[in-house]
Length: 311
Length: 256
Image (cartoon, rainbow over all chains, first blue to last red):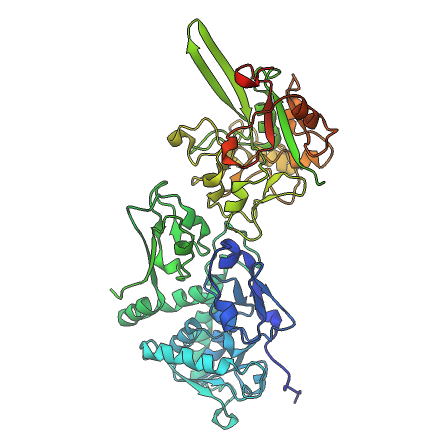
């Protein structure tokens, strides 16, 4: 067994797209989500977004909070999801625990609420998150945050219908069985894999690995894309819960909005679009991550960012 | 002292022939007027005054003033700024970083966000707004003569050449064919200046009314002219320190 005591998620899994960063797009933006969550002080926002690769340990916690997709994980989560769905009681691990996991991510710190929600509704039965090696890992700060995220989900009722996600911090709790290969389960998992892969292909045809979007370009962050893909096959009840928990509503003050379309330009995800020139923009909640950059940017204080009501 | 490129325009030499504007259009592939945007990096203020028979008609060529305290640069929200000052004092624009918010256009005292609405005579900064991609002619793939020839863009692509109506310059900051959603403005033909040439408007002026050079170099021609004649600058009260100056006006206190 290789010595995994110093192994952590690697900085190579962090995909940086500076043109998406709210601070890079608008120098007066107050966004400091990545700075606040980074346990290693690797993020600097003084002169635009930069990550100190010496201090970064690749916990990817920042990728789960960046609202614009400036910091994202490089590995393909859909593939991970497909691997897990092949097994009845899957275990998801990281680079330290890949011997006893069915699928791995660089670090489970990258599991955002959207990821957990997607896992919850893409799998059935029981999903174990293998945290057995986290205790002595330099990235152990993610443990509490991950538990918190899972709690938030269940508190909002978003994990009620789906599979049960178990955080397993000791090795005894982890039962990692090899993929069973009886006839029935083979066809069942085969069907599932086909479906998952089709979804992956469909979602990937639009854009390949785009590392550097130009500033005028709009790109939906992977997390939001994942959420939109997950929600497309949910019950109405659950959809309503998703709306209250994840969706944002951007509205405009009719009297003060001059229709300058500045917010349309600054929006990193393309949630705001020009309908009629010189009139207030058109808003698409599916493309909005609620980053609030439009509100910060508007000179006329005409933008309101509020949670989207359930109905 | 570092360079500060600037331009002196001799109004008694200028007859308003428009050669500078045409030269600019061909050099910089600027579009025709659309959506309240002029795309005239080189433009004019025409003034008709008086009552017959005591009438006057005057022309003032206008372009980006490449201000030393440029409000457009201050207004640019992006890091690093998409509108910025180069080391030699040119106000430059980077197409890749520009998000098209048009803060620069709002901030610039010489610009209008919509020339038609604001009844502005000119606008230094123009924005590629609208739903169609700009420079339709350079993208057009329809046949030039139906059933007979390919499109200009296709022929040029196959030949590895630029279409006859397009000047190709290779500059890391800006593209000869602009994309939708970015602003554009006079860049003092930085790609030419870098190679020791004059901006194309100054080159084309048949009367040599446009004199370009380093204003900080006292031996340069524009610096000498500024010393010799009392210069006038547009909207000096805005305190932007414009680097385009006008000398020898036919009227008023500037008359020599």
